[in-house]
Amino acid sequence: MARPEKIRLGDLLVQQNVITEEQLTLALAEQKKSGRKLGRVLVESGYATEQGISKALARQLGAEFIDLKEFRPQSDLIKLLPEAPARRFRALVMDEKHGMLRVGMSDPTDLAAFDEIARIVRRDIDLAVVTEGQLLPLLDRVYRRTEEISSLAKDLTQEMGDIPVEFGIVLGITPGAEDAPVVRLLQTVFEEAQKTRASDIHIEPQEKSLLIRFRIDGVLHIQTEADSKISTALVLRLKLMSGLDISEKRLPQDGRFNIKLRGANVDVRISTMPTQHGESVVMRLLAQNTGLLQLDKLQMPPRVLERFRQAIGRPSGIVLVTGPTGSGKTTTLYAAMNELNSPEKKIITVEDPVEYRLPGLNQVQVHEKIDLSFTRVLRTALRQDPDIILIGEMRDQETAEIGMRAAMTGHLVLSTLHTNDALSTPIRLLDMGVPRYMVALSIQMVLAQRLVRVICQNCSAEHPPEPHELEWLRYELGDRAARFSYAKGRGCAHCASTGYQGRQAVYEFLEMSNALVEAANHGDPNEFMRIGREQMAGHTLRRDAVRLVVNGRTTIDEAMRIATQLDE
Image 1 (tube, rainbow, N blue to C red):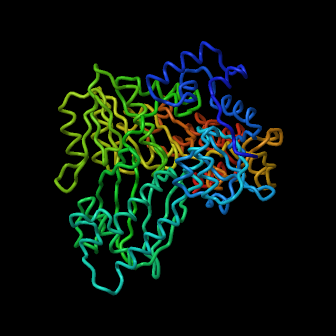
Image 2 (image 1 turned 30 degrees about the vertical axis):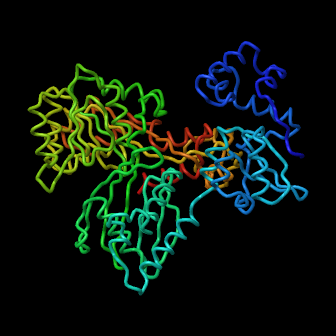
Image 3 (image 1 turned 180 degrees about the vertical axis):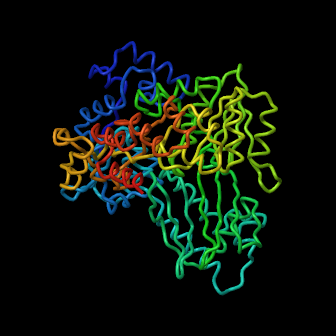
């Protein structure tokens, strides 16, 4: 395709009946006041959709409109246009046909950008039109900074070589050392982790290398491997950032620090542990400006949401949310807190650490080193006239007993416990040494949850079940298993070729009925388990995972993984 001609967007959209003359006049007036692009004003005013504008431009230019949901990028072609101009010009090299590069642009009327892209790639260009809303997230995914991180790691290796260097400069702790290799390397690692939605960063020294891995949607992915020489510098820098003892290498340490990434404040929880080849570091990333979810946005099944709301709406008793580490328990509790929070209620939270900030709550950070323990804070909290208490975790018998006494004396208590499922939670409390009468009388509900990966909607395709998958489904669904269609992600740029994008919780709950209270009081665990299974029949974590499979939200493989964890 030849170089596009200059187009007056407003006139074009009126000619193609995308907008009216009146809407154009109003949009132009708004554009003059705000200085924003006309297309953005039209979309934000509701006069046109981004896709409608892009398709109109494509028709006028005789170019192809490309829906990026179906696009599968080619990494060798993408690299022809570096990241900086790709972001500046809102463009991406799509593919190659007949010796020409097809480049998708969100603003094909930008002639200067078209000419500059042609100069950079040194090839003839065939223009395609894409929407900015689809392009920007895709740019984040395809321009992974793996090579940049590897390059920075090599720079640091050279600085840490055999030639003596100023250690303060290498670590970035002397004035003017913001460009020290270790500082630039860590900054890039953090930015890439945020871009890829990583929840954790693992820095692991091996015998001959240093491994940096990201946990994305619950699964670890290798980000880069570097020379093991740089391990000490990275660990020391991170210890300095989090206020840990840099001279102590023999014992584990825990800390935290706050950084700003692309305009977002991120709280980083850090844990160090001595290993055979050096100190291993794991960092949990918690975005502080992420809006708290509402309960009805957690995608709970209606039955679970209704009963959970009833449980947290009672004036007293204890509601426990259970599951393994990283199963979203805190998110669920804070969604509940968000709903309960009001000027009429005094809410105190006791946590280690405080993961979310919520105005109106009295949040206390436990600090064991100065004897500010869960039990000490809880005893004091009960003298602060609270209506609701959130305990970050029932870690021991003493904490559990204080929480349950509070629940029995007119307070609503919410907390978490690490158990495999809802039914085993009361038994676990009894094993911890909590008196039977407390367990029987204080617990209102136990909500158990797990996180399953969600199929990427950009590459979802029908998946005929394998024989072993169908057999497993028959165990859950009976003869109905063969009637449903199932899906699986093929893997694309939007999901880093994993087939999954994001996670969703599956749930089950147990309510303390009169029969369960009586069984708990009599200390008969077998009878307790029998009654509990009858109460929960057809509404277990396994069955909720199967529900998501049937609805095309997750794969059979993910549901089977959850079932395997529950059977362990």
